[in-house]
Length: 226
Ligand code: ADP
Ligand code: ADP
Image (cartoon, rainbow, N blue to C red; front, side, top):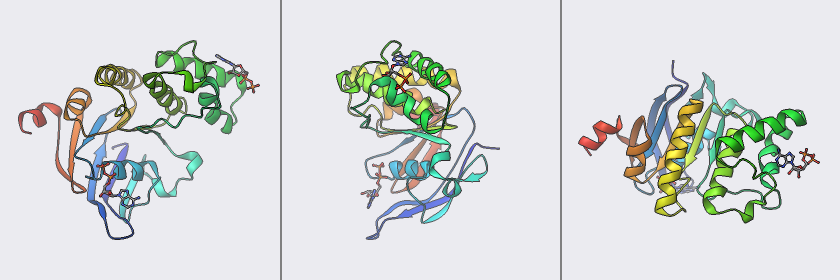
């Protein structure tokens, strides 16, 4: 059985824009799937429906056999990282990461252990007391990733997380994320309009156009037959 099951979802926005049009996808546990396509092809809207931020006009998204629209926001099984990190600049790194765990009522010592482990994982051990606005763009995106991971989501949703970074940093972070993803074996959906990014990271690539799947296959196949 697949961890994520998307059955014929569509999204029509008020005004009539059909952002997603009868889209289906199954993702197995531990897979990294890239949604690749030009701007406006519906990638973000698919991701937001998986995350429960947007309700499908038709169709169903299920995670572990539970419909996403039936899950209350505080129990969402997904963690999302956006292009702009939206960190809390009035809190230090530690508090940014501890916040969600506090809401869940975890004891302070468990929170500390989890925060330290995740900081280590993203290469920011020792950065707990730094204010987020004193960090570089790449470090801020690592904190954003850590803030999602610390809550141990079943599925990680990454929406062009490196788009605002320069080419060199983007390539480095792409490798780091792939490495972390494989170590944690965390099921991941990665939205990008960069073919190189998708080819270098994905177990499977779903090419989207006009809200639909144009092609879905392993990177080797997509590369041979673009
Ligand atoms: P992508 O992520 O591939 O760039 P999006 O999912 O962001 O594509 O957008 C798909 C289409 O839906 C676009 O035409 C976009 O303008 C439209 N769209 C996205 N969000 C909204 C919204 N909240 N209201 C109206 N139209 C939207
Ligand atoms: P409080 O509830 O008073 O915020 P905490 O124990 O969560 O108590 O943290 C107190 C301060 O110590 C916070 O400002 C936090 O940034 C810092 N702190 C706690 N643990 C760590 C850590 N492992 N690394 C860096 N800073 C930490």
